[in-house]
Length: 99
Length: 317
Image 1 (cartoon, rainbow over the protein chains, first blue to last red):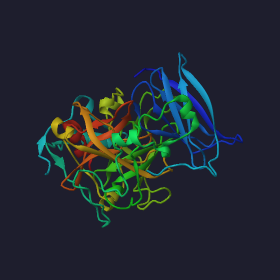
Image 2: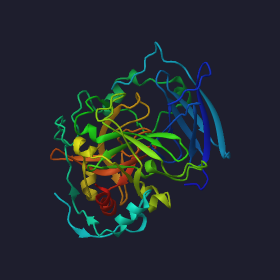
Image 3: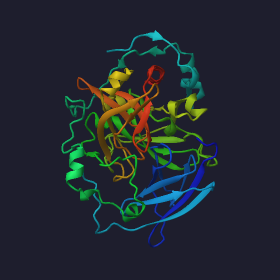
Image 4: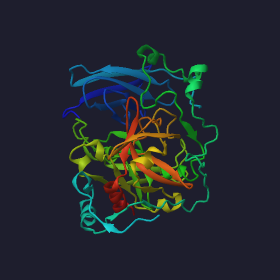
């Protein structure tokens, strides 16, 4: 594990620009095995994840009432990345949780 | 199968530490490090609602079917269609290895489901996280080390013992059949807290109440490589990609092991760190690992080796 991870600063909003709090944000893939824990966005829709090594990561954001969103991030040589995530409402759209 | 009362103190990275130094000291000075050569017994708790396991070593979950390789190639499953963004990237979540075989548990107030607890974690910087824990005694839940102690985050003020963890046994969405207890009392080992070594990524949450007597707990044990490789691993927990606070279950044969880790293709997702990886023996559930990591081909957990088992016995209260 790198001594200094890459910090991914994110903000989650709806399509009207209103912050989405309590959204679950987690890595779903990366260059190495990653801890299976999920962050909750704060009341401003913010979160900070730590990518342990440089590389490509996939982050997924899930929130009640919204369609889940996956974001691909390539850290490059940066020590910080900033992302804005806009979620669309799921009203009238099927979300399949059944098996 | 009860623990043998040999004495051996966990050493190296398995030295127990606590956010309550006075309690940690008592544990370190204690000679009560029984070396469990076999296992600790489970308990179904006082509540009578119990779900029996299948004889094949898995849980009886109505409607839960493992997808065979043949069916993947003969019938397209449109239920797996997801956000168009994923199609653009051509990548699906890798901790869920397609096909996604997880099944929702709805009778979460029954044993063994109520042993699994949804965790809401408040870190030192007040950031909030979700994870999973499982009872091993009246006061004690096991979980991942990174659930109780954040290491190498790089975020100012975040690393170290978390401030608190809200424990919700058998949670089902907004329903908390056994309420919620907040803990401020945690355990981990120096291999994790000092070194951030994933081989030592396990810890415990201690409750001030005896909630475990009501919901029950799992046994745990130390098993040989051959025994584990012949076993089916079961995991239930609280993944973040499903409706908030719902419990999901999957099982699969253990894929591989080494002296400190167990690897498996049991589908998991962020929020399931700390889940029990357990096997069923004669209808009883025994933890074999603590789930902690998602990987590209297999997921993995910290193996309950003898020093891990010794710490679990020391932490069990």
